[in-house]
Amino acid sequence: MVQARCDNNVPYAGALELHRRLTGSRPVTADIRSHGVYGRGAEGLTPVACADRLVNDYLGTGRLPAGDVECAGEGARS
Image 1 (cartoon, helix red, strand yellow):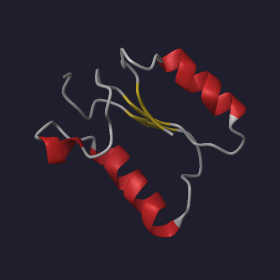
Image 2 (tube, rainbow, N blue to C red):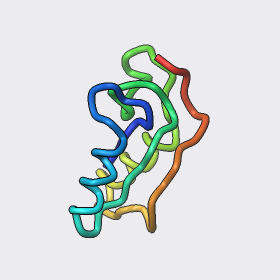
Image 3 (tube, helix red, strand yellow):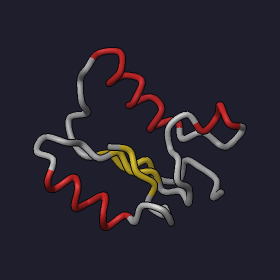
Image 4 (cartoon, rainbow, N blue to C red):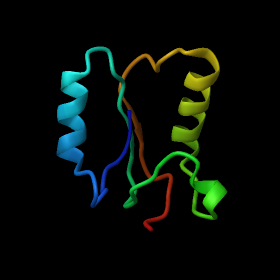
């Protein structure tokens, strides 16, 4: 699960509840105000390198992060 902490469309509390319900899920939280987190650089926005790296690793290997991940301070508010 990839979630922005300040997403006006999908409140963070809802993401935490979904994580609680999805056994084995690993939230990757970006400390940005945005609806999208992954691949922001492709849209000319400040990328969240931590999230991009974790998602790309998961897509390439199928391995989840060992635990919950906070990508703090890695993106401009947009």
